[in-house]
Length: 103
Length: 103
Image (tube, rainbow over all chains, first blue to last red; front, top):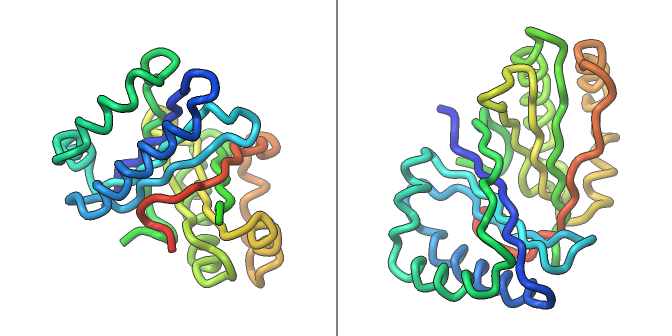
């Protein structure tokens, strides 16, 4: 069955990239046992220290959408918003056929 | 330790997307136990059936570069080239700080 993939950038205000990444790493830890969570990676752009990338794979899009209601995630989103340089842009969505690293 | 992330698109000639994806799924299987291979996913763009995306995470960039010499990978690359619609574009490289789904 195809899985849901989302890959998107969160742009932090100047100098806030590391702080944003820390918040997102906490979210990754919270979501690690959320239903359907296969992959939730936090990555940095070597050319832009304030650009933080989140790459996710979920069994379904619904699993992803439901994850936004996991206890503590909303609080983390609340911590992240003030240090974002503008609203998050919509990420790239793909259908994962298979490969290495997912159940 | 930060891991190496590469996310890129291979554009197939019209109508060859599925065939290309099949070849890349074989590559994923070959590479699943290559040294340092954490993630190797094959994804399709729901808006373009001939666009195949490969999302990889390796312990190091060297592990990724070495993987191109794994037995059978060159043969698969040889199968893929004729059905590509132009040379592969350079993928997006990130440094993975952590998250769910990697060792």
